[in-house]
Length: 116
Image 1: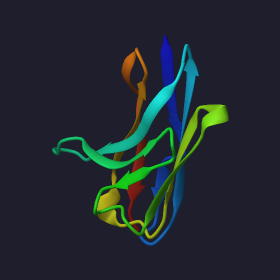
Image 2: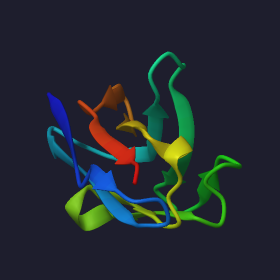
Image 3: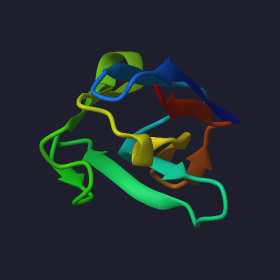
């Protein structure tokens, strides 16, 4: 069994910053890819950023230049540094891990609210 736990969400003013973390535990094995997704009320879940085991990253256009994804393979932990936050960034943020020979796993989500 694999468990993903996100943390670091909260309420922040426009222009502020937050750092999300996602820790994987259990029978993790080899994590090929990790990613952050978000879902705002009434909208579909969308990709924010992904990072491969090699360190290669990919960002949604809305995240480029403001968000930075990183991971610590030794700790099976992924991070999302979010700067210059906007009200449109308000959503539940989910982490995903794709584990070799096991499949995709999701965390329970962490709420990010950007509001003055």
